[in-house]
Length: 324
Ligand code: CP
Ligand code: NVA
Image (cartoon, rainbow, N blue to C red; front, side, top):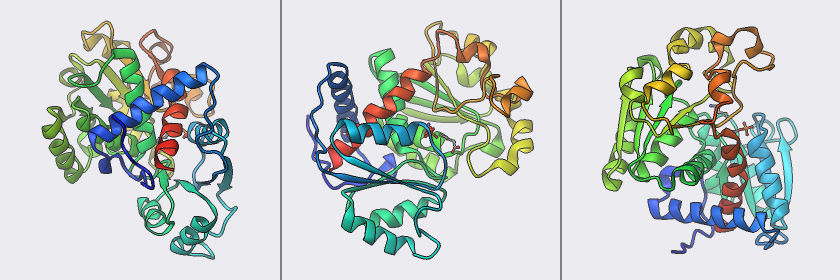
């Protein structure tokens, strides 16, 4: 079924119904098929899209740029230090100026409040490309990847292991709950999600016949998992927490033993990326113990992380096509 999402913001997946999420996922599948078939519909012909980035990005930035160009829109990258936002000019004024010139605005940055103000005052659709609190375009790609590999979402067990109170964990919890999945966060007590958000997610799960569980017990949490998901232990802007996170999260590394403990030989591994997995990155190469996932799992047949990364393009394209 088609839904009219024209003019809508995407600030968090909380504001989308399960039917609207399903519609965006189906549209993503169609746009992916079209791209593979060489069909360019130019759904965004002549549109101008502002891409504001306070934090660095590979996937989100490139997905927005390629999606714009595929569909005939012009993307304008506005990096940290390029515009007056929050320094010489308030967020509210910037929103109203950009809204007079652009047809849509992507924001990646620190405070979730910034994207909310942009969304309130721009007068054109605003999409959250990651804040400290949420990463809604990521969860669409995550759900699409699970659907591609498992055929459906409802009733599947999806387990997020690691920093259970970061933007990716928060969004995945809400998205999985809305889609009727059995969602579990495995994290130490210090890094579990806020109770108010868990309560909200549980309500969504009740409506879709899913479940939400939070535990610190790895064996209990991973048992029967269809999907194991992790993210970096230290998110952008939290670099000073490195030693503390290492101490708390070492027992939560995704490794071969954890995959085995799921008891499911067809379990898939997901990661939003970038990932530390014993490779040649400046930090992770120093010590394999500081990686949230082992090289063995990252490079195994279970790992679908590059399908997931590609799906950022198709899902972000779907969000822009649906809301503009
Ligand atoms: N997953 C993700 O958002 O990646 P980037 O930080 O590279 O955009
Ligand atoms: N939680 C990570 C996600 C990166 C895509 C961060 O915020 O840095």
